[in-house]
Each structure stands twice: as C-alpha cells, then as structure tokens.
Amino acid sequence: MTPGQTIRIDTVTRPDLNLAAGIEAFLTYCRSRGLSPHTLDYYTFRLTALRRFLEDRGYESAPCRITRPVIRDFIQHEIERCSASTANHSLISVRAFFNYLVEDEILAESPASGVRKVVNRKPLIDVFSPEQIETVIATCGADFVGLRDRAVILVLLDCGLRASETCGLTADDVNWKEHTLKVLGKGRKERLVSFGRATQQALGRYLARRPELPTSNLFVTWFGEPMNRHRLYELVKTRCLRAGITGVRASPHTFRHTFATSFLRSGGDCFTLQRILGHEDLAMTRRYSEVSQTDALERHRAYSPADRLSLAEPSQGRRKRIV
Image (tube, rainbow, N blue to C red; front, side):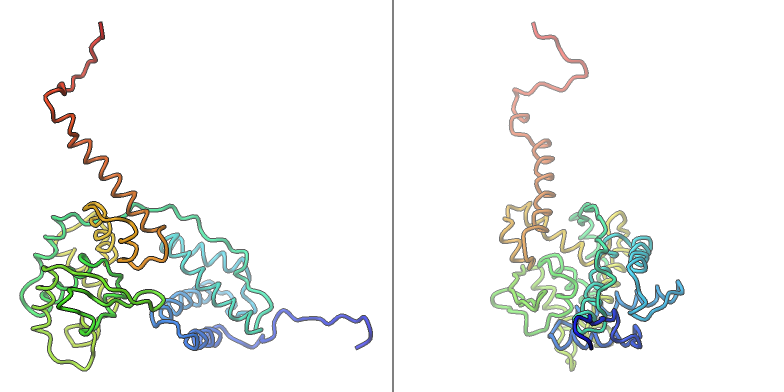
C-alpha cells in the first residue's frame, strides 16, 4: 500500500451467508445474552415471516441482497396482512436482526435503518362486561377441562396477567396463605399479584383434579403438557364462542384490559395498577385511566346528585323564555 492510499471497505464481509443461517446465528446470540424463551419465539416468528415474504415475492434472500425498499415492501405487506401494530413488531425484529449482522461485521450497514415505524392510531380498549364474563364462566363444566378453564379465566380476570405470564406459572408460585401469585414478567422481573376468594376456590378445585405430572407448570393441557400461549388463546376463543360473545376481541389480553379498567373504576390508583400489571412506565396505564375517566363522566351524567333532587325540572323540548 502506497502512502496516502485509502483502504476500500466492502459493504459485505460475508456474501455467502444465507438468511436461514443468519437467523440461526442471531438466535444463538440472543440465547447467549440470556433472553427469555418468549423473546426468542417472538424473533423466530417475525423473522420466519420475513423469509416467507422474500420467497413468495421472489426476492433474493441473502442478507447482503436485502435492501431498504425490500424492507419497506415487507412492512407494507404486514400492514395489509395483519395490522399496523403487527408491522411495527416485525420491524423491531428485523432491526434487531440486521443490527446484529452489522455488529458482527457481516454487513457494513443495516437495510432496516431509516425505515420508520408505522403510524398506529390507538385503538379503543376492548373490555368484557360483567354479564359477558359470567356467561363465559357458565360454559365451564365440572370435568377437568371445565375446571381448568374456569381457573384460567378467573386468574386472567382477577390478576391481570399476560398470556405468557399465565402459562409460566408453576404450582409453587401459588401462596395459598397470602393469596398471591409469584409472576415472572417481562425482563424476567418477578412481582407478587393478589387473587381473591373466587379465584382461590377455582384454583383449588382445578388442582384437586390435576394429576401428578412431570411438569411443574400450573396449567396443563388434556394430555398433561404445559399450557402455551397459542393454546391459551384457543381456550379463551373457544369459551367466548360458546358463550355467544361478539363485538369484543376474544383473547387473554382482553381479560387483562378488563382487570385494569375495573381496578380503576373501583377506586384503584394508576401507580398501584402499574406495579400489578408489571408496566415499565405509566404510558399504557394512563390509557386505562382515560377509559375509566370517560366511564366516570358517563356515570355522573346518569347519577348526578343535583339532578336527583326535586330542584331539577323535567327536560322539555322547547326552551322557555326568561322574563
């Protein structure tokens, strides 16, 4: 090399790396960092969607051949296939994947850099009414599956747990004396959540029918396997379908929403709710607060103390002229 000569840095140091090998290397890196199985499943699912998209559209799938327009095309596909929220989740995974390739010096730059998140309007928070919940619980019989489903639904409603947190519960996490569950939340952070008498009774009846199994998971399938998030979603969906519930999203997270809004409507505060739900900040908790405040305004209009006095005149169509 002569003096003053610049060194050319190639944009790709591993042009032979295919996408499948790159994803597997990324997942191995994630495991070495101690990321949770839930996070690994999350990345696997989203990156598999990317790989299928590239195959279906005929794009070259080698990481060095994936460009920014291709990533934008994939995000648009996710919007049309699912929703803006799903597209943003996919973008987060894709960014993490390509950032790893850059850090590992496989690529010089990430094709996902500069791709902006989708503007996602905040949807209304779905909640179950008390009547709907009672109808769902009424579909649970006295057999093993019915007792298990009743216990699952009451834990979701009474404790506001995420689907992954519910599936991760073990029998040792139940403190019968204190009426609490030890929950392993996001970031592997533990917290204690209380449950009431109805949930205690439902758990007791379920465990009395649950046979001795090798797994320590609290909730299991008919075959004795640990309950996972996909089976939990199917459980809730099936029960809501049997109950004839429409107009509300049938998912475990709807029970979490229902718990949060019910907690605030009953006089709970946002800071306590934040700790119960395991939120990192108050952003989402404030959304529940907005819903409960709207509900409070509607209740005040219906039950205004002043309007219930004899001072209030009946409402009339025409307004009287003041003399």
